[in-house]
Length: 292
Image (cartoon, rainbow, N blue to C red; front, side):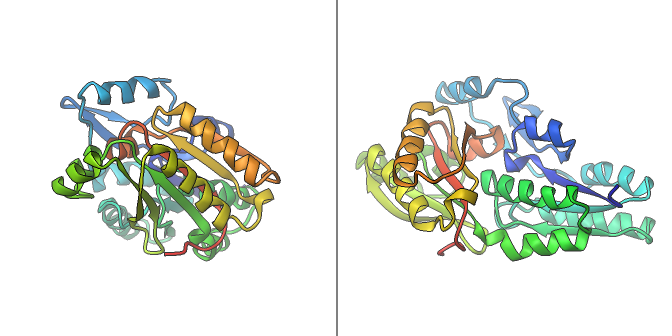
């Protein structure tokens, strides 16, 4: 039995089936709709389509930081059991939440000085984080030490990539990712951004293409360009209620990389979906080091 607990957060969009099967310890992240707070349940309620339909109808979900005190509520019972913690966090560059993780760790380690806690900033969010979690958790189940698993994550985290496009620029504008002028001009010209996670853990638009079909073709091309070992690429296609487009991307990927071992397809979660909006499609995989 491990002397530490492997813990991560729901901003990974890790499907709940993995959480149940592997008995993972999760921190569930909040989002708010019409003044009511919910926790991301990783698809357990089966209402993903309803969530994005509500956004199309005008609902405007917002996200918020998880307070230090809540992290302490997750961490302290583990320390009380006499175990240490490896926490695999989503990117520090996409939220200030990680500061509350560090603050909770500092507070509790003063109270439990015999305990240890390692925090790994994956520089990822959503499916790339899921890919890292599943690979690292396999090492955890093999009995690798906390330091060994953390070292593997640090060495390999930039090999987890995401390339995605959004259907409506209004959500990027609302989240402050682009200006109102850029959103208006882009919508008028039917420009679709191709967005990726950088080596610094930020999201950047690498190019803009005309039209949805071209954007989906570019996602496939980026995957083909950056997957170096198809049999072990762990490809995940995410969509925000765009199953037909996700299926097209999967078909094209299989056509261009027939040696791909497995492709999983599932919904973007509500926290990530609040920022990218309905119609988003992403191709995520374990491959070469991020190019930018």
